[in-house]
Image (cartoon, rainbow, N blue to C red; front, side, top):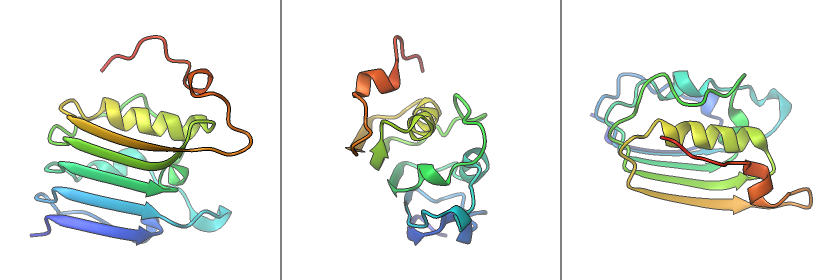
Length: 135
């Protein structure tokens, strides 16, 4: 059974189902254009029951679709490590997707986030506007 998967490309091009033992997932979404399509984050992660290590790179959050939930409708209880590369704090959708995932990992032990910036970025504290963070 598949235990580790590393993918670079359009996440709409893959279907990850029936992978009950997948423990390590690395995704790099490289398709940043209007025709790339959208991905439903809740539906995408619903098969990852044994996932322990998640690495999201580049434009993964840009692939999200619709309204961003506060958290997934289910918890991914085995996720211990989360790595997010290339997130823009000036993009409220990217920040919301990241927070949605963090809230859905109740036993998260370690997290690494690499923040990107551009000329339109606003200070992180203004962007997040977080007074109290609750799991």
